[in-house]
Length: 187
Image (cartoon, rainbow, N blue to C red; front, side):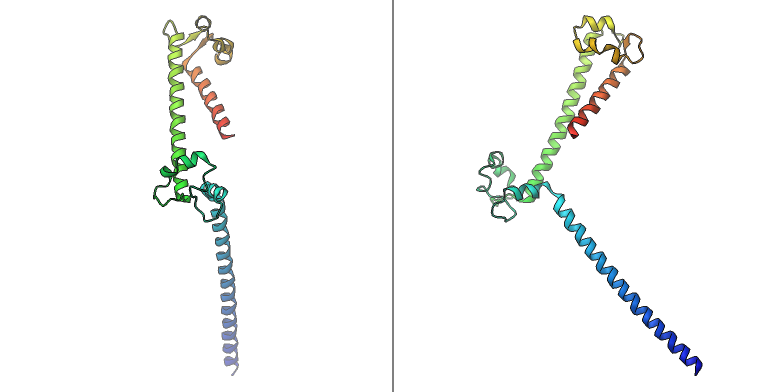
């Protein structure tokens, strides 16, 4: 009889332990779902600039823009047909997002092209200044070139103070300039 009581007590203990574990798992599951839902909502709120753009102009709050709603936004109104890719006479969040992506790509391409032009201009300018074609610029060559900024900054550019500006020193100047330009663009 003693053994029976012990077995009974043990099965009751196991049963209670199982019920408590189920409750804990249930509470953890609910917490996980609530947290995931909260994060999903926050991500959706802060995710799309297109959504904020539409909210600002969407007077009837239907989450899309009509020609009427864009009448005061001349640039968008002028490109309405181009932006409305599905021809439903409304501009949706997806269509605005698509335009913004294209604009970003064009901007990046423009910056690359401008950097290439600057690089080519520097290269041609250096070959004009380097009259003896030794791929270095002496102080005399700089002064003859009538390049005021080059003459003023000659000693700053000539980091090893040998009286010559080498290609490496010019590359360092370009890198500093590029870094400064990137900082300006970010701020």
